Length: 295
Ligand code: AMP
Ligand code: FE
Ligand code: FE
Ligand code: ZN
Image 1 (spheres, rainbow, N blue to C red):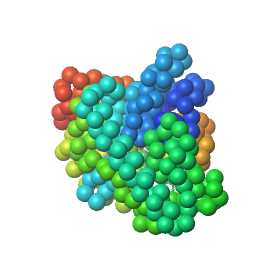
Image 2 (image 1 turned 60 degrees about the horizontal axis):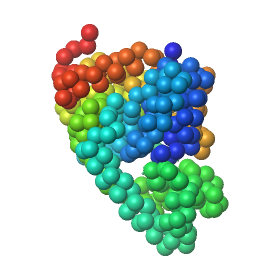
Image 3 (image 1 turned 135 degrees about the vertical axis):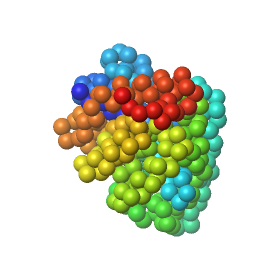
C-alpha cells in the first residue's frame, strides 16, 4: 500500500479541497495522507474529519519556505499541533510577509503596464494562502502569458522584473518551531536543489546538526538515482524517510496523488516510522532520534 505525505489544498496553492484530496486518496486506497499547505494548517480539521469517515490516517502537516545561507529550502513539518501558540505566531509572520510582498509584486506589474488589483487577487485566491501562483493564474486568465510556467519565467521567478523577496525564517528556526509544536522536521524534495548531490550531502550534514528529522526521498522530481543517494543519507544520519506527490491540482500539470499508476508509491512502512518519530519528539522534547541508531 502507498501513502502520500505531501499535498496542497485550496488553503494554499492547490485546487482541491481537503475533503476532495481525502476522497481521491480513498479511491487510490492510500493508507495515509498529509496535507502540507504552504505556511498554513487551515485545511487540517477538514482533512481529519474526512479521513475519519474514509478510514485514512491523516497526519497534520505544513510546508515552510526557509533559508539556509544562500539556499532557499522547503521544510515539511509533520505531526505539529495546529493550536500551538508559537507556531501560529510564526505562521502569522509569514502571512504578513506574503501580504506585503503581494502588494509589491502588483506594484511592479503595474509599472510594467499590467493591472491587477488587490481585490482581484484576493477574489482569485479565495481562502488560499495568497502568493505568486495565484498572481500567475491571473496572468494566464488575462492572456498575458500562455501558462503558469511562462508567468514565472517572464515575471515572477527569481531575477525576473516582478520578483520580490519575501520574509522567510532560517531553516534552523523552522526546525525549532516545528519541534516546539510537537512535530518532525523533514527537508522537502532535496533532489531539486541541485543536480550535484554533493551540495545535498553537505546541506544534510549541516541540518542534522540543527536536529533535522528526515528527508523526503520519494518525490516525482527525484530519479531513482537521486532516491538512492538520499536513502544513503537517511541511513548515515538515522533520518526518517518520507514521500509524497506534491500534488497541487490540475493547474500545475501534476500527475495526481501518489499511488496513481503514473506516479510514485511511497510505501506505507514510512508512515509507521514517521508516527514513531513524532511520538519520540513529543516524549523527548525535540529531535526524537538523539543520534541513536535505527533498529
Ligand atoms: P510563493 O510561495 O508565493 O513564493 O510561490 C511559490 C510557489 O509557486 C511554489 O511552491 C510552487 O507551488 C509555485 N511555483 C514555483 N515555480 C513555478 C512554476 N515555474 N510554475 C508553476 N508554479 C510554480
Ligand atoms: Fe506550492
Ligand atoms: Fe515545495
Ligand atoms: Zn509542496
